[in-house]
Image 1 (cartoon, rainbow, N blue to C red):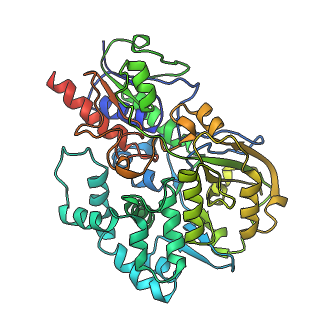
Image 2 (tube, one colour; image 1 turned 90 degrees about the horizontal axis):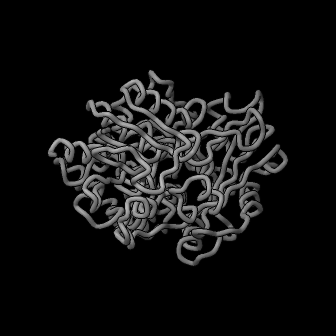
Image 3 (spheres, one colour; image 1 turned 90 degrees about the vertical axis):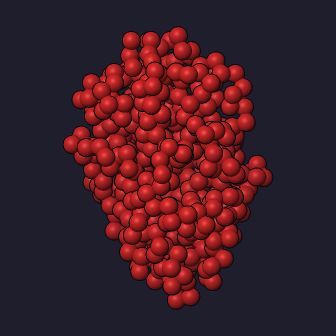
Length: 469
């Protein structure tokens, strides 16, 4: 009998397996697809030699992850590559606000009215970032905070809606960039705790940047897999699980799946019936004949570029997708240009680039024209550089990854109480009514992102259960 079986070889499932194997347990991972990766994959989606990340590409949470930082993943080929600027937010006049490793440079890009305000906002937290990150990404209610005063201060700033926090800024340059940071959660800006989302992304960028993995996001998954195998763990691909009886006997079963799939496979009935899935995205991957011709020079040297003229435009786009059930006419775009940092991702002189805009759950339309019209506003001549494109709306995203129900790449709405209490209101979010079944996907705390902390935390819960039995 195995000690633990993990279902799903995404970053969280692989991290959970590694953490248990490091404790000397026998572990096997079962993955439905023919390769590992989940939301951290790399594929040739357009043309030969152009390596794209179908989902996550830039990794501010990955490089800052306490779980990843405690593993020797660099020995297994993981290398973080940084652009000159972690992120830029261009404006129609050709200027841009930036998220730089330097707080001073970032603040200066907002203009004189808001520079001091921004410095005062991040100053209490940045020197204590590592302890703060461990506190709010740790297993809930099982350890005392390392720095309770800083955590409490962060809560006071971040728990209210981001729209409240942004009232501190006088000009829209700072509000626009911060709104874009919050939009990574794919939820309206006025939701509970959205201020914390924006602060986390800003602090992560200042602390260690917004890098890509050399060779693509698949490198993260491959490094975790290689480390797991060296620890004695096994990984089985092309192995779809429909019920628990499809798995070998084990003392614990850990699911890196959606709550819906877990309930179906483990026979939990309506246990997760109140769990809500959120809005989706429409994603385009491009093979380009040259770099994106951004008007703003800062955007040309940034790894991630947010595309939306102002905070009101961003709020309207998110509101349309999340609350009105329609695709926005002028979508707010999150874009990443990996080959700016990693030329190996495309043939010499060519580039890979992706962009997504927000759309309702399950939306089956085509946002290509709206996305490219928005890009042309900030990068005139962009369409002339397109060699090929690959599109993926909610149905395609859900088909590629079963965790993305309705195309929700966050594996559950990041809004309301579900931002903080997922997958349901519980003092033990990784356990289920079945004593041997656990959940470790992004549907559990601390939530979406390629950071492995949901798997790390779930592994601790499993270890405690096994040790007590």
